[in-house]
Amino acid sequence: MRRMKRTALTVLLLTASLTLGACKASGSGDGGQTGGEPVTINYYGRPDDNGVETAIVAAFEEAHPDIKVNYVELPDSSNDRLKTINTVLQAGDSSIDVFAGDVVWPPIFSSAGWVIPLDDYLDQGEMDAYLPGPLSAFQLNGKTWGLPFMADAGALYYRKDLLEKYGKPVPETWEELAATGKEIAEAEGDMSGFVSYWMQNESLTSSMLEFYWEKGGEVVDENGANVLDEAKLAETLAEMKAMIDHKVAASGIETFNTAASRAVVTAGGAVFTRDWLSGYAPFNAEDSAVAGNMEIAPLPSYGSLGGWGVMVSAFSKNQEEAVEFAKFRANYESQMIACDLVDIKPTLKAAYEDEELLSKKPELPGYLPVLEASKPRPLSPYYAEISGVMQLEIHSVITGLTTPEEGAANIIQKVGQILL
Image (cartoon, rainbow, N blue to C red; front, side):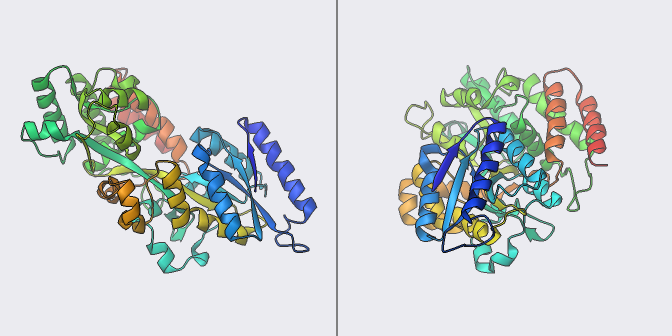
């Protein structure tokens, strides 16, 4: 196994090109073995936190001595990873064989013809082993374009002790959440009813969609056509702004990133928070003021699906070997390795029934209702552009620069131009 780590995009691309040349020179990049030499594939993966990627690659190579994996560690930023992979595949470069992808990427790469469907390599049992939600992000147009190895979703966290104290149920609508949060926060004093991270970034788009979906709104239909509803968008934006104006939301929520929002929660400063599944661990850590009292539930309507999976390049000269690694990267063994090394949420049903794993992570069953109530963000090859427009317009509304009606009209106009 060889492993490279680079941060600059130009260095990554140069390294990939050199690696491809070396593979060809040794006879390992010609689509098969030459003279008994192992085939080498290039895997562009996530950051190697706690050595998780190198451990999985090592396990694969031990089980497949005829295949070597050249692991290229991509930057921390999801956007930077996308730019790197997009640049290589857009050029038709074969230096990427298999890569880790965000759940919003499959429409981009599948519509461009840059990745291959995996259906012919999978039997029904293999498909059925995955939770439907995480798998659905990689399925469109009747084909499966990748396999999920890490699940995530927008979730509602609530102060169990405070809801019990005031005899309140877990809210099932955003309106009920705002009313309950405000009532308890005012009674307790020195806390907020709701907190999240609403700075101008991808999580802001996800949060808005979770309000919008409750109203029955959609962005695109199953054919990718624009179905935005201006009235429902305006209602959604007004509801988010009202949470700030009526002092339900924490002061400064429009500036909060993940760390700032979680700091409010762990200090005991919020009744409710919208966060990803990764919030559970810090909320219930030993140094958290609310440890043991922060419970998880599905959001009203749906939560935005997050997570990561693995896809195979259409330009790979070693597609069969790349598929073999992709299946391994998302299989049970690899997910158990990852669970031991980093805090991932498995995508395989069996993991949530594994007694040994549950003894280490008893919170896992609580994630299932959230994952079952999640849905992918708009399955469009133009999602990055759509989200960029939405982030700007949502933030303009919640900071008071534009009205909800103006924000909705701007989204309709600008997204309409993208989806012409």
